[in-house]
Length: 251
Image 1 (cartoon, rainbow, N blue to C red):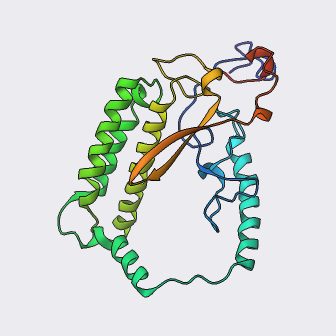
Image 2 (cartoon, rainbow, N blue to C red):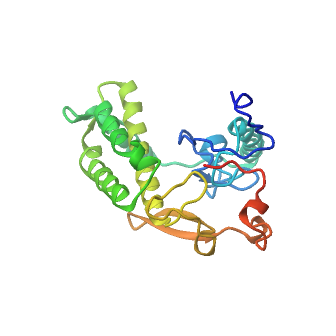
């Protein structure tokens, strides 16, 4: 189709619609070149790992598979070596019992919200085009307010009717956490970059936002801060953006 339109994808720049279906440009668990996280024994690969190897956008079809293949191999090798050298874990019976009770809590609840209902409400809040693709502070804040409400009022009353539903209940908890993290990070970054577009801040701002947004839990709340992108990744800043990135895809 593109060749019939007179476009050579190897020579011409063209607009490409970016779908937010993975995490190769959104981040993921922070890792090093061995795919290690800052939690000993925990490794991440593929879409769950924050490699930033394509920058803030999905460079081309197949990049996700390429990244998964490389990080999967490295994570497997590193995890195997860690397992060989690690000592056996020591966990108390009381800790095991506490964890078991926490995991099975939705099964014990006789009434409450179904996992499908809560998941649908979350999806209806964060997936609309005007929230997820063309972002604005007012819409992001409205979505975050709803996610906070779901977190505080729906999650404590999640009910699972069987073990299959129990798995879904924990997935919904993780999805809720991910939604809150994404919305807070999107509000925090007051610029547009790659596939990330803020209607109220439509320009890229290298002077103030050539940074990574970081999140962690602190005193029961979500803390956000920035860390500068290392200068070795900047390229020649004396050149224009088009000259620095001549083979870019436009979002």
